[in-house]
Length: 159
Image 1 (cartoon, one colour):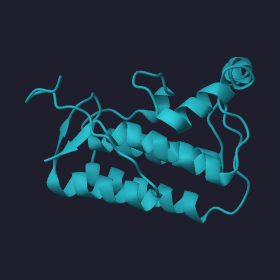
Image 2 (cartoon, helix red, strand yellow; image 1 turned 90 degrees about the vertical axis):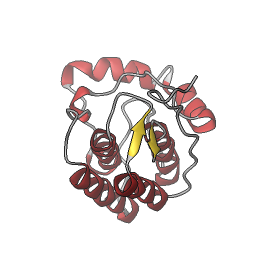
Image 3 (cartoon, one colour; image 1 turned 45 degrees about the vertical axis):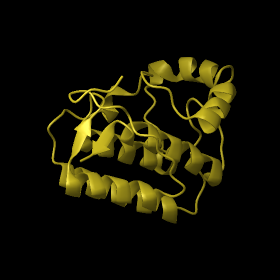
Image 4 (cartoon, one colour; image 1 turned 180 degrees about the horizontal axis):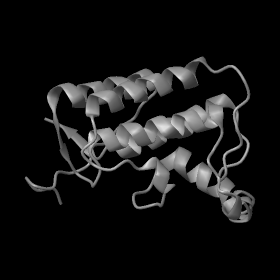
């Protein structure tokens, strides 16, 4: 249940990365309340990292490769179908290096998100293999990226 100090998450449905960037810019311009733990800078920097990974490569530590291989070849396909159909569930772990400390510069973070969205949109090469979801084409990767953006931005409520 939402309260004045703990608002309810938004329901978002993005069709393009331009819509994602526009939403982040709107939050920056108008301000926002948080229904979760991360601020706008944290969300935008996290999303920017994950938009770059399919283009530049995923940061998979050597010791984690067997675990990711097992996940990608067992639960990964089902998880991907579920995320594409229902969105991302809250509370899943992420790579800690993709979570900035709170209180960062939101203007710079929105700019990095915009830059990463442009990088992804303009990319014509191969899409790197996801450590969890496996090989995907650009369209499927974009759909996953949009679900990821919906998830994180849904915790920021425009004022």
